[in-house]
Amino acid sequence: MSNVNHAERAHSLLGASSSSRWMKCPASIPLTKDLPEETSVYAEEGTVAHEVCEMMLKGIELPESLNGFNIDEEMIEHCRMYVDYINERSEGAEVYIEERVDLSHIDETMFGTNDGAIYKPFESLEVVDFKYGRGVAVGAENNSQLLYYALGMAKDMDIEKVTMTIVQPRADHPKGPIRSWTIKYDELMEWQKELQGAVSEVSLAEAVAEGGDERTLYEDYSKSGSHCRFCKAAGFCKTLREESLAVAKTEFSDIPDHTEGEIILPEPSKLTSDELGRVMASAEMLEGWFKAVRTYAHKQAENGNKVAGFKLVQKRANRKWKDEDLVVEEFEDLMGDKLFEKKLLTPSKLEKIIGKDAVAEHTYKPETGTTLAPITDRRKEVVPQIQEDFTDI
Image 1 (tube, rainbow, N blue to C red):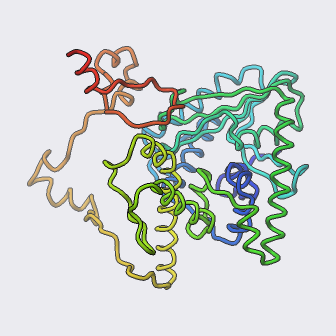
Image 2 (image 1 turned 90 degrees about the vertical axis):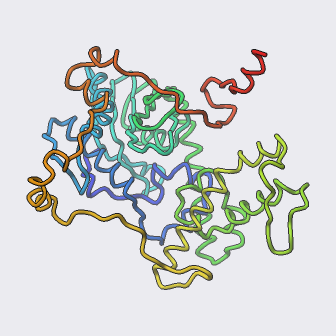
């Protein structure tokens, strides 16, 4: 095992971060392997946050900015949650930070980089994954990415149990920002068989794709679901397209709102409780497909391929100062303090300076409204206000 620099980190087609996708949909590997790597401002910010964590753990002084992102108090605070978690468990253990792991005993192309790991010889291994994203709250239980990392590290260790931990400070999860799942070493070895079976399926899918049999590739090796959300092939995947359209049709099969060649969706107010439930259950897949189609169409347009009925235009933008220092020099005498806006520190930032106890009595968590969640969600069900009103009467 050897440490890997973030900037030099390579990506495996059969990687840990995408394992939840290719283990369910083997066809996604041949469908995406020739597509360019995609990034976003959120992914780039996450990479910077990971580097901040590594520097904090290694005692390296933090710069004010990195790769175009300010390393402000908010980012440091969130990174500190992960750093503190690692440090609190490091006594009497071997700690691995940004460690490259490989599963070459399964397939020579399988490798990845684990954020952190805590090893207590003859006892346990804990793999810890830091998630900086706020959009999707990730669970630790049966998490294939963490199992992949654990398998890659545990093969060189003598342990009885393995713990998988997610540290995700910015996303709301019913189990809190830190959640763990522990299994016996034997259970990890059982999961290895599942992984090996998935790798074999990928190999078969690749052989079918190389043979040009697209129909068999989609029929036998392609499966749609929530794992399609971040798939680079989602915009043109026939399985996802057909499944999304089928859902849109079958959910309303008993409602005569279809015309030839077009799907006319009914008004939400006309749906029964059962119909609403079915549509909500499929919403994530449908929304993911629509987003993928928009992204794919945009890329086609940027590559010079016309999209019927649409045109490529510049995004709307807000004005920015060319040189802030020059603006201050020009207008400070005229405007004085009015040229600047003052903003109160957040409770989190202030308590870092004067302590939690001093700040606690001045804070509260406001009610931010309700949201609709699956019945399996661990949060307590809220009684609607209208129902409480009728109960009072």
